[in-house]
Length: 463
Image (cartoon, rainbow, N blue to C red):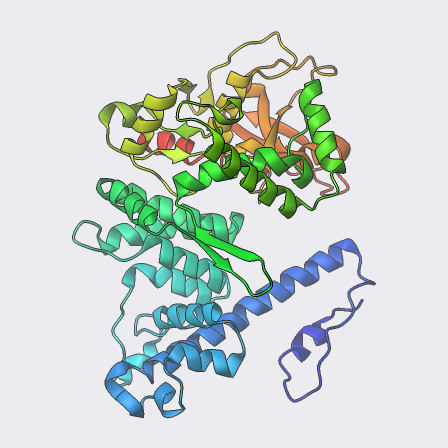
């Protein structure tokens, strides 16, 4: 076995020459166990780096002036000094310092109490987060996602409210990627601060921009930022142009299937197809009259909101595929422009619509999207537009019905995995589980597959 207890302990011996041990000879289980063990070691090392970075920040605090550690060594900021010493990126150095500051407070470091210059606890609502990092249970990236997403208390949001939100995030962190944890943190902050959702939405919109920069080789670089609503429109158009090349859903309808097959065989790269689609949209938009309809239909953007929030005109809604909550005003604008499809739920389940058809209807797929929020496979971030409806009871074998309760959304990759590798999806009331094959887990323990729909979480929370 290439990895052993000696291998792991040798990682800390910086006096010896080092080379990573080979992993090619490991069995699958040993390979994954090595990955898990190394990840835990990394969390411990990163926690130590953060504690040291926090102390560097303390010894470089502004009131020390040029006597501060960073200034004395020629670095403008403690983050710059940490970056120089460690060789990490500027963003990583900033994360080490920010997380290190919340780890090196008297509440978490009793020895600091005795120091005359002991720092006050600047973020008491993040004590549990800092404790989890200190114990090696939470990564620096996850801690930074929680810190940035929750923000700071103000005249409306108390530190106790943020502490309770942080506890929820710590509970969910093990099952979420850092990106999803960051989105969940922003969602919880919005829940606490419903009165300023529109203000935050407008602030994001004010940050949008598009730059065209001519380069010396004759090319032009395009760069920019999109607010969530604009991103949803652009993403929808780009998905339509490129999804068959990027593992998007399979098509049954002949015309769509033929188009997808032609796109797969296209000699252009996927990024080239995307930019050509962008240029074509601009060309058609410039040539069209004020009343013309480009492409025969508008890009599909789904908005999700509970009926209770919409009627009360208070709360939040969500744009499918985007993680940032939007205001009821934005939802009302979309409803006014596009109309609304009511989707009724009972105890967390969409009411059945249609039982005879082999395929799920378009309306049923809207219901599945509202309930599941994308591919239900744990860790998968594919949005509803990139998924296919899967019968949890096989139509031809188990007499499965095309009811929403007996269907789930899976991306193409995980849909094929379920069918080809003997995975199963089961349901207990409104809860869904993935049952792995014995080759993956001899005990076939069900893996929870909770909804990723932010709208569904809001419905349950306000029910």
